[in-house]
Image (tube, rainbow, N blue to C red; front, side):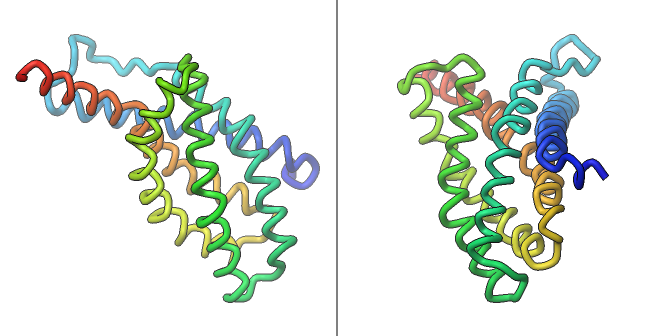
Length: 194
């Protein structure tokens, strides 16, 4: 009901919760994986990084939902209807134009919230993680957007995207946080051997 009376606010709150929840799930999966591989420290309790989760929540609330809300509105205006041709056009434009721009926008904003302020800190991270993240984006989002644009009523499309986004945010959290730590640890080990 709130989606009909307060669609923008509802989408922002939902997106913030889902983005934060995806990060929290990522942290838990990494914790359990480390616990199984006996790389875990002395702590036997899961202690999430609430600041990290908060950063993802803020981005979901203040960046993802507003931008996607406006973007889907523009797509629906430019390509009205749900025919197969329209769905293919809308998906193509979404993934060929929007995704390659929005993904580094999200990643850059995340790094800014982490305290990275210079291009010397941000650009190498983008170069390292963006190509894989974009390919993974297409693998998940192209089929998801075909379903979204073909079968989901327009007022629910952002919410549908948020549900798929829960899976995506779990991956993106891992890619931008935990995978980065793993890569840095591997690089440090290689440097020690040289």
